[in-house]
Image 1 (cartoon, one colour):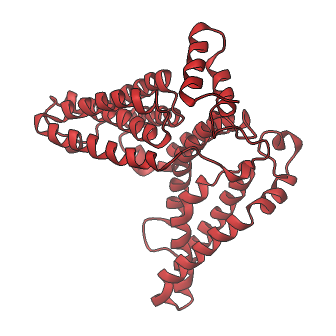
Image 2 (cartoon, rainbow, N blue to C red; image 1 turned 90 degrees about the vertical axis):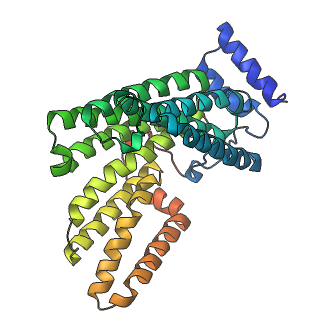
Image 3 (cartoon, one colour; image 1 turned 45 degrees about the horizontal axis):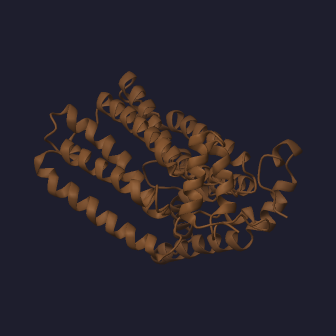
Length: 348
């Protein structure tokens, strides 16, 4: 029988420190040893389970953390944006020593990680500007953004070494993406505005490929690696989806042809989501789907009801996909070659 959660965690950490096992082995053992977190051999990977809340206390603590860190940053902002950001980062790290490292609370750990990395990111432009102005009042320049990305990536790496919160990998990759975008902006200032698709699409696909690498290493989705993959998919999805659909929809009034193309792209993304068993791509494209549906409904002469009817249609699509996810996955995965099926979760 597994022992007390704190004793199990302390034992695993001691085993890692002594060199008896490595961190990856400890991560694989944790679901079997911690009470209430045993790996279920009959668990369906299609459920896309995510470790966010282990009890209402997680939500209660998260509310307190948001209030405390928000108030701390606000009270110190009069002394300078850099000081306020660094103070919030230090407080987030200190609180993580208890709520993440000792209590192992999922949702508070996510909030503390985001607060820490975001505060480090915000502190760099403020420091370069003299440390007095708020980071939100400083214009986005390539060099400050690049240095902020480097600092945030380093902060995420240090946080991962200490706490191993799954979302940390996505935060670090996001910081690296900021560095790439800053370098491109410095080389060609108008590139992101004039040609966003060739910039963001390869970046999003690279993050998607990294997420798939983590997914392929845990097809049963029973270890921490599947959580890492989830956050990477959540990061990659908008970077891939928004440039494609905004390019198709255009900046002006949408036509029925553009709306049909958006729906076609959504169907293609739905096929990809079904194959890899991740819904993040679909979530990122729902707004565009609603806009396209509204355009087609308005073109049919139902202008006054287009918003309500498009929302109804998108809601129906979401419910239909949710209800039919497993049979749809079975159909799509069954069409794939064996080399691909071996790298994605297989539905029974």
